[in-house]
Structures are given as structure tokens and as C-alpha cells.
Image (tube, rainbow, N blue to C red; front, side):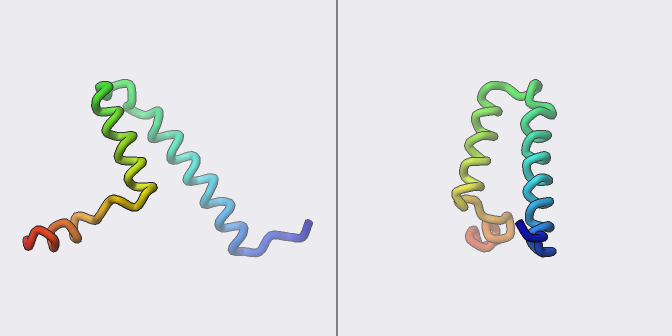
Length: 65
């Protein structure tokens, strides 16, 4: 196996950071969330992965604000 390119190294490290952040987000303060809040948070993660979220700037523009 050859040496990883700079881009591959960066992507590999970024993937590790992303997994670490996800793990932290799952465990910090979750115990203080109600069941309904946890469900809404999971739904939000799902929508983010599916590309269904828009920025607040886009929302303001859509609302004519």
C-alpha cells in the first residue's frame, strides 16, 4: 500500500474529527433532554443528512424579511 496523499490524510483526519464530534454531541447534555427533545434532535440530524435544512439567511429571504 502506498503512502497517502495530503488530501487523503486530511480527509481521514476530518472523518475522525467528525466521528468524535458526533460521539460528543450524543453524550453531552443528552441526559437533560426530555424524550420529545431527543426525538426532535434525532429528526433534525436526519434532515441535515438528507439536505432538507436551509440556512437562517435563506429562510429570512424566503419569508421576505
